[in-house]
Image (cartoon, rainbow, N blue to C red):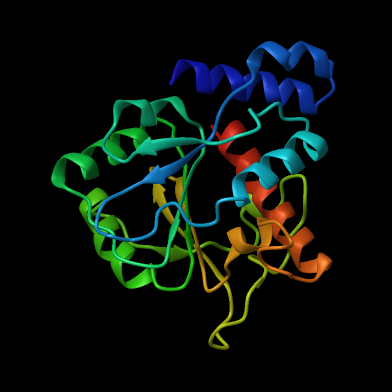
Amino acid sequence: MMRTHCYRLVLSLLLTGIFPLEDLSAQSTRIAKLKYHGGGDWYANKTALPNLIRFCNQNIATTLMPEEDVAEVGGRELLNYPYVYMTGHGNVAFSPEEAANLRTYLISGGFLHIDDNYGLDKFIRIELKKVFPELELVEIPFDHPVYHQKFDFPKGLPKIHEHDGKPAQGLGLFWEGRLVVFYSFECDLGNGWEDQRVHNDPEEKRQQALRMGANLIMWSLTQN
């Protein structure tokens, strides 16, 4: 994770004005979408991450590569990414080896954003117990720094898509006090990142989604 830690340091210096933007050009990094087994559509929200990357590069001074990579949940390449995005509507199944690999990634400094696309919830809760049997998903308090990075969300996770009348919740797993998994539940955050031709959301909702996504990216790059 040395490359990730170096990027976090440089980004922190950039955001405080110590480094000019051009000095970060050699520090371009990649983010990834998580590929998992079980039959769920891990590949959903195909236009979401490129749009989020573009927004971040334009608004929070990142120099992320314009397209996301695909990272296997059990692959060693997972350790190369400061931010990994997981989505889908259906079943998820982690083998013991995959769960162990994901745990190693997270306790080594990685960050997983799980974005329930309505249908993932009943499966991912079970699989997270394979990764961290000792931890429980908890609602992240509204004063947590993840809601107050570049953009301020004093009421927590914004509601992007309405399905069943329930409020959006930002849930998390904390390892030794550090937020390692952010679970956007009852929200459809990634759908708000998609091309407008895919989900014709009001521009206000799209901006809310992109800003919250930018906060998550910034958190993954600058957390201790």
